[in-house]
Length: 220
Image (cartoon, rainbow, N blue to C red):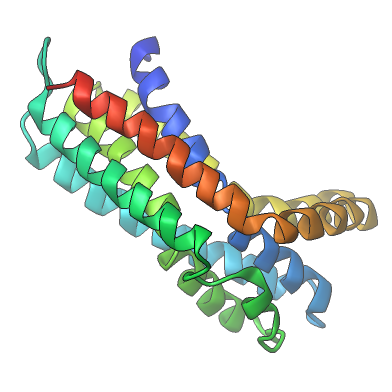
């Protein structure tokens, strides 16, 4: 049975990792500019999925290599959470000051014309999505060190990965299922997120830096 307390610990981090305006905006751009149907967009989704699969493997290997969780203070998790909180704080300041890539810069790139080109763009955009990485890894670490039964671990890891990949998977899925109606919904959402991308990411970084910082301090 899935522990409610474990879900409360890991799912907020997975939801935070899914708040990725740049990935969503790039997907909508691919859908709007591609002359090859959904092929490049699905390629983008596959590329992002490969990156998250790599994060998952690395995070689980690291988590299982660390000492298992025990009742009471958890200095291992505390150190991990505090280090990642500091990194998120640094990322938030860099985003706020405009030192990271903005969606308008990506908009100037030529439209991909093939599945493989979309795959390369998806791989690159997710691999450089540091905010999602920094939120995804502590969730994996918490899960691996809790040592749930294997079916539970597989279920939760799959759920976390799916949530994190929503910005890459949802746009082509919406267009595939709903056609023009799905495309119009995305076209309305993307400009709103593009205008507020920096603010969204900065608030996300600062908010989860505080969340992980409090978790870290409480674990000492």
